[in-house]
Length: 86
Image (cartoon, rainbow, N blue to C red; front, top):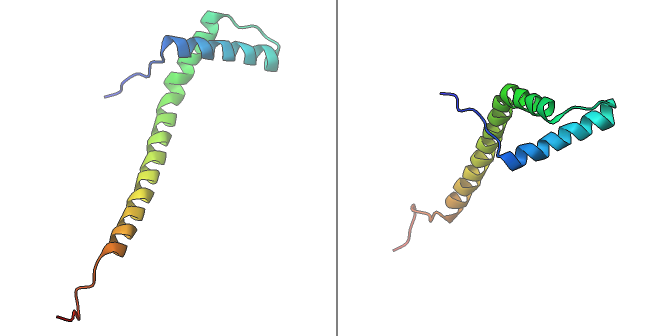
């Protein structure tokens, strides 16, 4: 099941302004609110799943590293059980 990515209105408006500034500065072109919004929607639809999957993969790697650290710490806490003196 694919859940579409929806940006909060305030965030989208901020991104629209960034896209417009980019077009103005880098391409010496003007792009309107509607054009910028459509471009954002296109990129969110096309790039969103790749970026999301990359974030999940990065989180998975981080969690595995932390689990390994915890395992090492737990092993260091173990008490010896063989050759105990009574």
